[in-house]
Image (cartoon, rainbow, N blue to C red):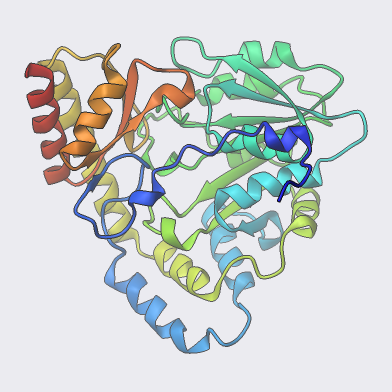
Length: 356
């Protein structure tokens, strides 16, 4: 059967994913920036307690919104939930549609779904190169024109793990046209240790800023797909109107509430990440491999012209990492900071391959 499809859809690249390797298959999964630990007992108990109510449509969204709002000293009207950050990215694109304002600005490289979703919804895309592996806010600002409607900023930036700092963000926001929405995706914010990492929520009432967060990474709920967005109440209300009914399932809501209240588990995850990062730095330096210092739960490592081959060799040894060819960084791989035993296995196997 041959059905005509609009060219903008036919031209969309497939999202670079490694999900076909999911499940308990013995692989060490260090390709998708996932949390290597199972949820805590508190979270698992909340999930089990919800099982008997799955015959009903989800409730308790207001309770979760109130919990998130309290965390940031906001009101629940300033919070919208989404099926992961991906649905929220789509909400922004749908809610922002405006005749003559059909341009989105992103960094190059950036999280792949920004450009995919923008293309689906008919936006033109402007890609601004990084500067020294970092978001070039000044150049992004220069790229704004009369057609610009949305700027997607990823902080920490995937795939480099670098950040822009609060003072630079404030300078960037000063002078931004009021009809240009700045969507700051902070999926990895919990891992950031730099004291100058922006507290983006302070800007949402003064500027058209939306702050996207997720429970997929630090909170270990990637499989339940739940994220949220913070912003000025009227702007959030427009996003809410574009959202699918009941897009967040009951189990995800219960798990999210428990996860946000489980500070001990979050501390444990962040401490593991800090130690794993330090281990990687030392090990990569011993191998004379360049890397980009990270504020996230992954590290971008320069392997050289054999990066794709080494990625395949690692997979043959049972270790899954991400080759960065799809991000126009063909000399690099991105490796997640996993459990310490996983980190050691990666380094040992990489060392064996390099020295073979």
